[in-house]
Image (cartoon, rainbow, N blue to C red; front, side, top):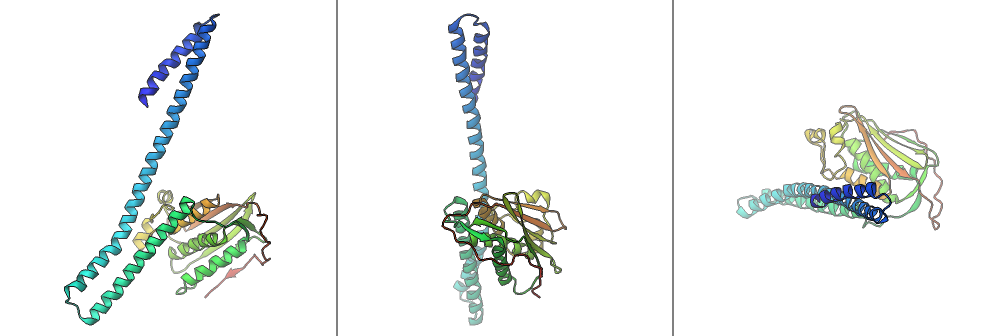
Length: 306
């Protein structure tokens, strides 16, 4: 690129000089214009080339980081499986110990299978190979189904949810994946809060957008970690220090789903001060073949599942 840039800059000077001294000479003016046009094209090509090279380097770095993270997450269950197999191969275990090892072995295989399936699913979402529906849905229905999924995942510790959904709020999108995105945020809020859990779910309209906000009173996220928290396998130090279960794919799913809907997800948080995740989605146009959704009451009071 430098080999092209340096002569181009010199030719630009030549073109300017030809235009300056051309005077009444039409030939000098034409040559000067042609030289400047050529130089402008070369400089534009240089800038675009630099951008593409930088983008390629960035993508390569992201790919390497992703492969490194995947390798690390796969190595843990594979190491356990190898140790269990070695124990069985030695033949020094009692029948009771063999049953226990086989149970643990089955658990590690299931864990590995789930991890691979989630990585493949995330890949389909991010590559655009997932078939998203476009139908008009009530935001209250999305919230209700997300809370139901949250209930199923947190049966052992019923938690108070404060729900405030603007009446009549609706958007055009894929209902199932939007429910999953909101449910992931609710489950994360549950994971990273203490015993006195306070989780909120609200939604309101903003111009031509719908904003869905999930808040909590949890451990919070530092400003530096907020830049990477939506990356695959990214986990904050607070989550690691607490020993909270997870592999760091939940927020990556949320980001992929929101981006597929041409929306944006952001976080506002501080260590020890809780977190607030905001999904901002365009309302979208109602498909011609869509049917009107059933009307439902959408403003709810505090929901207590104790």
